[in-house]
Amino acid sequence: MTLLDVSGLKSGYGEFIVIHDVDLSIERDEMVTIIGPNGAGKSTLLKSIVGLTDIKTGEILLNDIDVTDVPPEEKIYNGICYVPQVDNVFPNLTILENLKMGAWALDSTDDTFEDRVEEVYKRFPVLEERPQQKARTLSGGQQQMVAMGAALMLDPNLLILDEPSAGLAPQLVDDVFEKIVEINEQSETAVLMVEQNARRALEESDRGVVLDLGETKMRGAGTELLESDEAQELYLGT
Image (cartoon, rainbow, N blue to C red; front, side, top):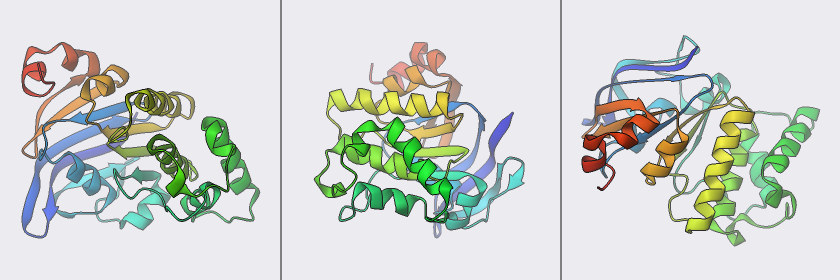
């Protein structure tokens, strides 16, 4: 069943149009990765879905509800959580305080809050070991886990990730991808992400979308795109 349905999307910043008539859909249990060259509009597409750009035309449906013009702070209540590539944690706050910030729509005195914290700790055990540690003192991979944990505090239907492995050491990339797959498979949370490590992302994804110059150039199963000569030559660096 379709969770997110984007049709005819044209968006950008002010009069500068970046996304041109893009269609995109994701099923409730899917993981979908958007790949493409630098400047293709990948991050802008994610921001448009979240509500951080100027949408000129098109429609965004979530669970068949039109959320095209819903402000980003209200999209949380529609089940969308977004983890940007940079500035995705509060560096001067502790791990636990970051999780509390992620749960801003919950009552921190409610049992639900404590339950969510426990769920995040189960998924990211390293965070439970040091809840009072300031986020700025964590490694890049640990900060990414804090950011994803904060997003999961509201139990989203759709988790949107922008370059989750950017800047991480190779061994930490594996850890982050393992966690993303776990979130998708065990929490029944759909995942839509932009990822620079295109090969690894497509290996893990149900489907992939290739974006170039703000337009959809290719789409298909992750394995199909990995085996496509055109995708390999133009977008996968071979």
